[in-house]
Length: 417
Image (cartoon, rainbow, N blue to C red; front, side):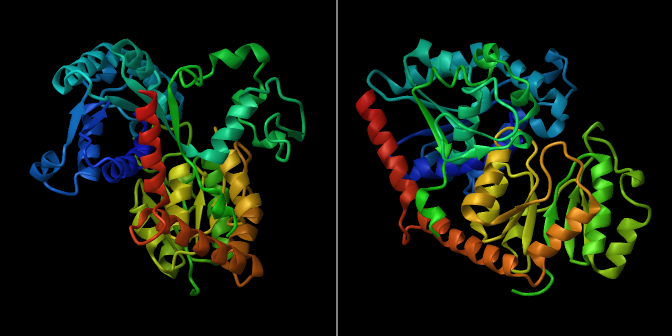
């Protein structure tokens, strides 16, 4: 039900296609509208050819209105962040219908056939369906390996001490208090079993989008950062800081935190005359709601990406050799940012969590990343090197490591089964 998890599943489907050419693949969408999005993003060929290759779609009949959610609010993109838990909890109502769907798969496949459920991390209840049906189950964590490992370790270490501390399983890694989510910062020991990882501990395997160890070994004027930001006060500071930096930018803007995500744009969210001034001068372009992020990242003049450091954004940026300005907000984003800054050297943080960003810091960081500085040159070089490694992992004439990992995974699953 998380709209941002569609791209990782699209990549997963392609990996399975390459690793197991004999497999029949069904992509199950938790809601009808997600099924439509998946069909568009996965079915590059027409439906007939997709069917011939053993690939199909199936939609589950989720109705948000039955669970106190707004009509049509069947994905994370259509609700506010405060409603996410209610949405994912409501998904458990799909358990009976999904159970019947799996039983149907088993009946069609016949005795002896291998059935494997790869479920999104927010649909962990599917592990109970898999166990009842006697089929193999994996949970797909659409996070980076480094970030999710630290996140797990932190939850296993609560209550957490104050200030800076090291982790039980990662003694070489230090974490600052400002890198904790509010939930982690206030958690006590008895809360461990209440976290979302409980069902993940029941599954046979976890599939994680990890950056391999070898990644860590490794233009023109007018580069533009892409921006996606939240609270109105912070938006004001960002606007002033961007204008003061004098660098060109594209800013994708949505209603800030505390407003309905479907609200119309309100001029008071930005300084008076800001949009008209930067667009008339050619310094910036403010886009409402949505822009083609992948296409912009792929453009040769894009010099940096201001991101909350969720894994889709990280991979999209690195896949095109674009350095980042990090503003982690929640979950494992803090540790993704930590890896990007400290381990890879392709990111500079501008703020953390609910910290109010200030215009002076925005101007300073943007100039560091986009100006004629040694930091910019080094970050750009490292990002381009990572881009080469990432592409080689996918391409047939590269090292093909992604496909090989998936092949080894299926071989291991077969032995277990």
